[in-house]
Length: 113
Image 1 (cartoon, rainbow, N blue to C red):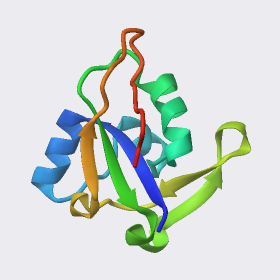
Image 2: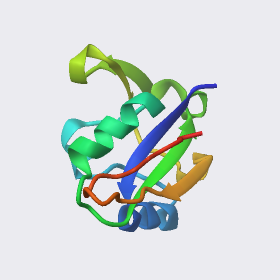
Image 3: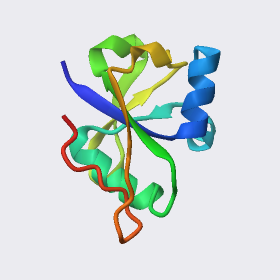
């Protein structure tokens, strides 16, 4: 299976877990799908969109578990990114961990396994 990742604020993820559904962060709702990244893409996603933010989580999912609503579509630099069209069940997360900030204010994802 292919592991994909969602970077999300702790507050948003805690609310999703309490509700039993994640409909997306503001950018997801605006774009009409939930943004994910592969391991190789997550570091750049963190750098571009989450630098300087506190309390960000890295939530891992097995792509195959997300069903037919998951599509791989071209985005940044023509790379195929995983996008989920529809709600996300937080119970499908296989791993959740804090995405720590480095001294430069960028999230340090390190090894994503």
